[in-house]
Image (tube, rainbow, N blue to C red; front, side, top):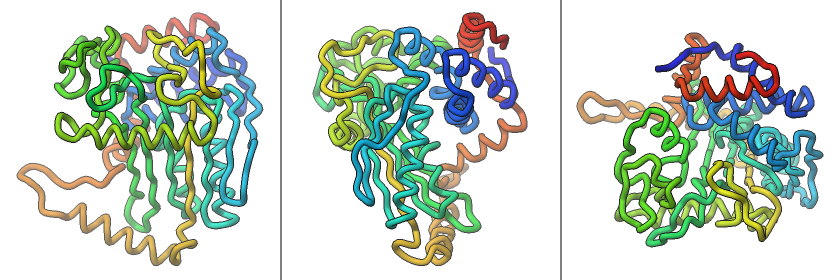
Length: 355
């Protein structure tokens, strides 16, 4: 069963919870906007269902609600940002703003972040560049739940990559993908619905394939994108994200990444500070006139969208399903499964905020 709540209703509730854990008003609003962007775009695994996780990390002393986010090292086009243990939902947008400002000044901006936490959906951060006629890139490492090809050990996260590209008359191109076959949040949804997961999503502790949504909780691992014959590609992409986000910035990487999930504990011997992100912004007119580029992006998009398709199907452009879902949910509301409603009610009860 699902209960549908309006975006504005969920926004008020979530904002009040973030204020209750000590976030300043401006940060609470920013964190809420970042988090609910996932629900609006239909990525329910990364939205308000995770609010209880952020509260849990705060209760464990692993989130600083009043961080002093700042640049610790920079050149005209690059920077390292220290998130001071803050919510990734706040640290991420602020770091992306640094990348955008550097791109405004010199054409491109590249920012690696340390000492942060889970930052919601990568697409939200990449899309911030679109309003400036820039292309945006966002990556983050994540809880070590993924076994590299042939490994029995969990050494990587789902490590998403997002790329946003502005268009003219056509909707913008927005790719937002995990480097695993499925994100852990998809397993959490299957757990709430008591449903099996598709083959190829996860393996048991002994390396055999599993359709049990609890396989990872029980010592198994998520699998890299690419399946039985191509998982080395997903493994490689996830490794790149980990290196750009953490080895480059001084955050924790690989198995040392502080986990968001409750069934894992942070390493007693960290190799860096917090969790890491990587952001990029590229001014289109640093390469060619923006209007000219966007006209050709329109042509690219319409060409692909109008491609001959298999019977009963049509070719989508990255970002199409999320854009359509966002428009629908702003009008019709956001459906939440009963276990999510119960989690939100328990969170609200801690702080006297009624759902």
